[in-house]
Length: 68
Image (cartoon, rainbow, N blue to C red; front, side, top):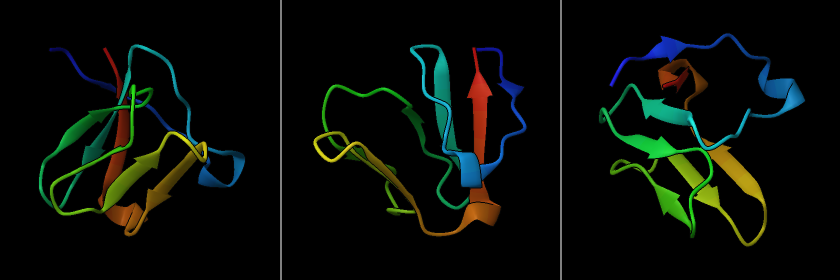
């Protein structure tokens, strides 16, 4: 999978599309930005609560977004 990393402003929200993924710099986990249900990386630095429409990032310095 080719990874083209995106620049973004977290104050304006996190981009989400079928071809966008979130990458954790702590555990190396990769999760889709538009999952079917709640999901998080193994270390829980990234968590997406689909029901609440919320993305939670504990350590922004260990977080990247890429498009495939």
